[in-house]
Amino acid sequence: MPRISSLFIMLILCLSVTTRAFTPRDYRDALEKSILFFEGQRSGRLPRNRQLNWRGDSGLSDGVSYHVDLVGGYYDAGDNVKFGLPMAFTTTMLSWSVIEFGDSMHDQLSNAKDAVRWGTDYLLKAAATPGTLYVQVGDPNLDHKCWERPEDMDTPRTVYKVSTQNPGSEVAAETAAALAAASIYRGSYSDSLNSVVCPFYCSYSGMNFCGVQHGFIKLRAIPRTCHTFSPMDFLQERVQEFQAYKAHADNFICSLIPGTNEYQAQYSPGGLLIKQSDSNLQYVTTTSFLLLAYAKYLGSNGDITSCGSSVITAKKLISLAKQQVDYILGNNPAKMSYMVGFGNKYPLHIHHRGSSLPSTHTHPARIGCNDGFQYLNSGSPNPNVLVGAILGGPDSGDGFSDDRNNYRQSEPATYINAPFVGAAAFFAAENAGYW
Image (cartoon, rainbow, N blue to C red; front, side):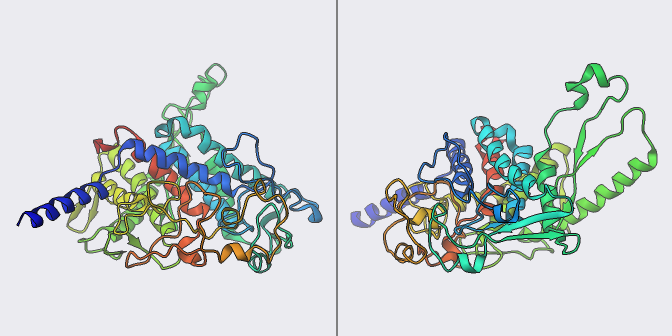
């Protein structure tokens, strides 16, 4: 009998440790690391004050043979290609994270802005030629035949572009969205330049932010009317437009909430939102950000979301987002953090060239295209820790294989991390629990 009691007590103690609630300090740690990850993805000439010192300069001649400067930007995942669409989306989400939750980033705000700027500086270069947008550097098929550090890469740095003759609407639109979002700074221009703009064109009521696009809320800055311009038809049109946006947003939100008539989402036994088997956490981080942004809107406006007969409050949305964020950070059946470098247990064999190969500091000699595969197939942990990287994550049954060759689960990506930056900032706030 005493033996059973002892085992029972040990089980309770074990559960209390492994399922502990994260504190604002934990979320601040996750926020710092989620931003630091972007240093590991940088292409171009790196600044001296970088923290991930195992990375070096790379891609310094990108675009030269095409008579255009395309040095800089981000490698999107574990390879050495610069894809324009995910880079633009990443920049949009980083910007939006700062706009919505920058007040909660504290000492990480400047680092988050640096991450945004690294993306926008490149996108401005890519859009510098009238009528042309450069959308990719590197041949992915040839790049994927090699396993080499960005600092060593010798695969063709082929440049691809869209133009008026060869359009690419989605990548052009996302690039425009990224640059627009990055340009938004809080504060009224009539406050900054009061002596020269008032009383001529003062802004008396600031800016509204609304809009839904592609199933996710998007920021759009709509200047409210100055005292000189106040047509009622303009206001009525904006009200109708907002109601349409809110209806779309509510439909999406309701599809995520178990028990509602509109519920369509799938969750793993451990509570993780499941969208698809490949790199599923990209959908989890984006949805978590959306839930928090919408909850912020509901909370500030005293509003609710109606899902048929069910009433969904801001607190409910935050609770669902927290469940997803906490799962990523280690409150899951495997008790593993899917953010590299966070917590006591996280994946050690991630699908990432620079992380898995010896750095140029420890191995100055060049490692050729085929020579790198010995490191890809090695059972040893990655020698360089890509701190803050969020991986593709577990499958629909909460299963995860810490295997470098299992890129569907073990590869990180900028577009997984970018929305998480905002979500982590929200929960890092000391008053995050007031909802």
